Image 1 (cartoon, protein in one colour):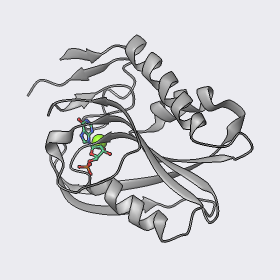
Image 2 (cartoon, protein in one colour):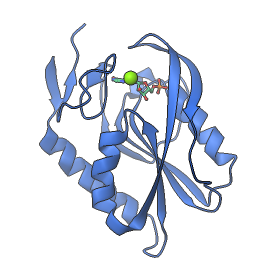
Image 3 (cartoon, rainbow, N blue to C red):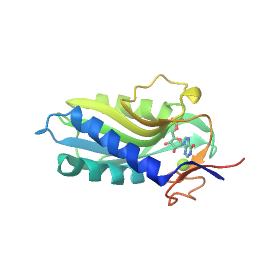
Image 4 (cartoon, rainbow, N blue to C red):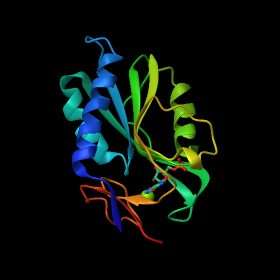
Amino acid sequence: MHVLLTSDQIRDRVEEMGREILADHASDEAIHLVCVLKGGFMFLSDLVRVLKAHVTLDFVAVSSYGTQTRPSGEVRLTKDVDHGVKDRHVILVEGVVDTGQTLHYLQELFRARSPKSLRTACLLSKPSRRETDVRVEYVGFAIDDHFVVGYGLDFDERYRGLPDIAVLAD
Ligand code: IMP
Ligand code: MG
């Protein structure tokens, strides 16, 4: 395992992303963050501390069939939001966009519920792995095709608590 992004690099970038998000929203608009569990939880918790009073929160959980490091692309919603998103300014908050299938599925799902706006924030993106053309307004870091763990991201539910993001050796 070797460190790809240190906790300091992550903190600085999440702060910038928070400022980008604030700049795109009027100061009197509540920003409704919908976190994709579980991988997005640590990114969410740092992001809300940048956005401070401007946010409300909700959570979805999805699971993808396939193997640990190579999902099949078939996405299943295992937990829906508790609150409606109609007429809200919604941002989906996800840890990593890989093939794009998960976010594609979620964006379609939420777009059909008539939010006032729908954007997506992802800490990591692997552009070379994309199979579905999915729009992500806020990307923390574009990375090469590595399977990474830490800062909320797991391999078989392990390593989520690492403060850095590390590449898992094969
Ligand atoms: P996608 O649907 O292929 O874009 O995959 C997104 C999901 O796959 C994420 O929500 C993660 O759960 C998982 N995933 C993809 N790449 C990684 C990785 O490098 N580390 C940990 N999880 C990953
Ligand atoms: Mg996982």
